[in-house]
Image 1 (cartoon, rainbow, N blue to C red):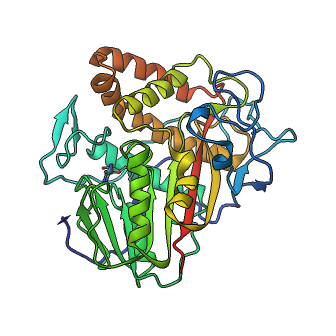
Image 2: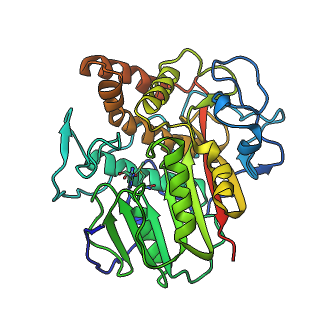
Length: 398
Ligand SMILES: C[S@@+](CC[C@H](N)C(=O)[O-])C[C@H]1O[C@@H](n2cnc3c(N)ncnc32)[C@H](O)[C@@H]1O
């Protein structure tokens, strides 16, 4: 375990410093309405609405994928309403213009692996497919803001106690969540762990970071009141890797402590077939195939609830939110989430180049050409695609 940071007082939460398409409105109206029935999912190859099974159907049983709550901006028929106007929407400003780049420069003092002009983690080299350079760090900070917006400003949904003592954030990335959590809960001693030492030096006094592989054996002496992991779907080795992490989280928690995972889902979907035969759909397939090929499948989010129950957690809840791929929905809140998710994905695309070159063996030029087609699809409001954002949490029995 390597500690890479000392503590410094922070004068504001990091999320306040992140710029992006629009500032977070944590007072925004609740994310539409909770509906009782699961959202109808379409087959990803398009066509009429299908029942609530998923495209990756052989990966999970229906029981495991039904969330306790699902959110959508529903129309009369239960589908997400499309904004049929091509022009901008005042709810989110100029929705089809791209904002400028984000955040301040964070200098790296560590030795990283370089490939295709990007840098990657050196510790456990090659294990995680995405880069760790400034472009990726800015994306992660923007994604943090998207998550906050999705959860109406909340850092967690688990009903943790007001004065948690020990808190762990696995795969902390830039540490932005951990820093915000430490700022919000001064009682907590927060540890963020990651393969990459990309966290800032200026920290609240109750926040530290460690370079660690969360799939290795955990050696913490203290028991945690709360363990959090976010956007880790691409990270762990097969099903067993993820289940192993869940089991370690269970063991590392104090009785009554909570474990929470927040993650996006692959593949994306559309209710009206507009995702079918697009470069974006092909990208979904290539990412899933590449993830499976490299032993770290991207398709496990729907199993989190079942795996938490299997690990021994009680009162396991799952809540589903929607991230549209761009500003196509009529609902202003979904439109705003779409604006941010599109930015996130447009930045992420270049980071997925390594999957095409390293795993699929494409040339750099072919990968660039393909990714530019995918980029155009993200900008195309005629493609009514979206993904689910899952929040799953459970309690260790007393
Ligand atoms: C998509 S980022 C999410 C970062 C952060 N959780 C957030 O929501 O902003 C995934 C992070 O997990 C880290 N990661 C991947 N595999 C890991 C592992 N086995 N152990 C620790 N960290 C890992 C990566 O280095 C990366 O920073």
